Image (tube, rainbow, N blue to C red; front, side, top):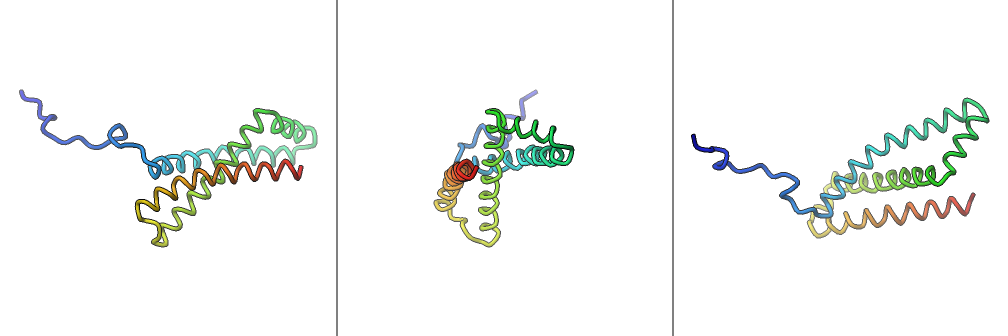
Length: 130
């Protein structure tokens, strides 16, 4: 019996496509959206600690002040800012703007750079105020 699967075209998959900035930012946008669920649990944990009592709140605040806690908070703030900027890109597309390939690629790269810069800026301002 002949192998008929060689006669049919293969469906494209991630191994076939070359990663381009717009594709990568789409993937990162989905990942940051998922990460925001974890970040929301952190906010809920902090609020619950504040309502339980001073001792528990102090422990949660201590944990968030450790190196690991700061890394988690930095990642959460980056995910929040990056997801927001990605949402603004999607809103712009919903309004009918930014479909040109060259502009869309530049905007994808700018989203990544702007999210990092804004996150660092927010943290610098927070550390100065603190």
